[in-house]
Image (cartoon, rainbow, N blue to C red; front, side, top):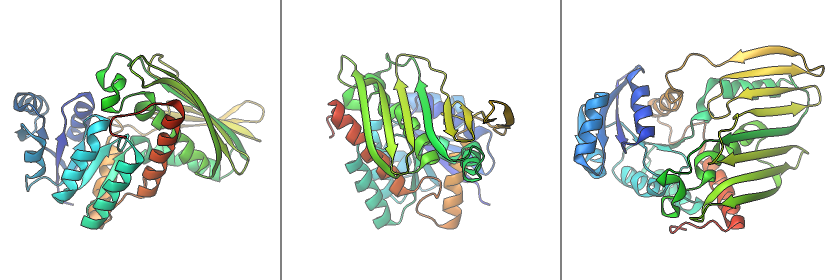
Amino acid sequence: MKTYKIGIIGCGNIAKKMALTLGGMKHVERYAVASRSKEKAETFAGEWQFTKAYGSYEELIKDPHVDLIYIATPHSEHYEHARLCILNQKPVLCEKAFTANARQAEDLLNLAKEHQVFITEAIWTRYMPLSQKIRELIEQGAIGKPYTLSANLGYVIQDKERIIRPELAGGALLDIGVYTLNFAAMTFGTDIEDMSSACRKTETGVDGQENITLFYKNGKMASLQASIYAQTDRMGVISGDKGHLIVENINNPQSVRLVDSNYNITAVYHAPAQITGYEYEVYAAIEALENGWLESPYMPHAETIRIMKQMDELRKSWGVVYPCD
């Protein structure tokens, strides 16, 4: 297998986490990083041993040696940056939320298909081994017939600019609520009959915390909670008529406990050792490139669009509007 030269657009904390990840991976090279500030890019490149540092995103995208570009800018910028990558035939791993709204997501994916360029959403939980194990346990009937799911995610991040500003597509939903929606989708599927929700908005008009309930046509129900004010336990519980699964940290599952109908823990499944957990999405992107795929089977384009539409519907019901809408 060839060594893939990775480029990163953006130099924030999430870019640093990806840089750390790449340093521990095989068949990848920390090749180039770009910022709107050349000085910031050079500092980042020096700290994380990247070969190239660019003072504009366009320069990195046009570098002929870059094999895959990871987009680590705010949600509001994903559309333009991914679009530029596609128009320059550069494969894209785009951080979640994929775009600010479903219209942008559909435009991007149609463009990628037209230009035959690989692109996938970097929603890391979709690619993790333990996420696959959870599905296997349910399909094998480990908890009998599943009926309810609860999941929460919350971090104290209300002071972060990218979270509170509508023009950056801020709010709890696109940053962390998206994980609860994906957890429910990976576990209970997409056959949703009804969705109800309520949110408490910030002074800037974005969603600060919310409760979302999904009702499925087969009788299942998912209760989801996200907050930018509270550090929650991040637990997920999937309950059936013969037991339940307890997932430690739905954002980066560390263990899954299987509990029987007598409330006895009968098995514990642990996540394999990881660098950060980001490596799985990078390896999935490389797998797709090696096979000539335009999307990853772990996060199909149709699922990205479906969840973006779901979040659009939620924001509309809350009156949370972005300038790009």
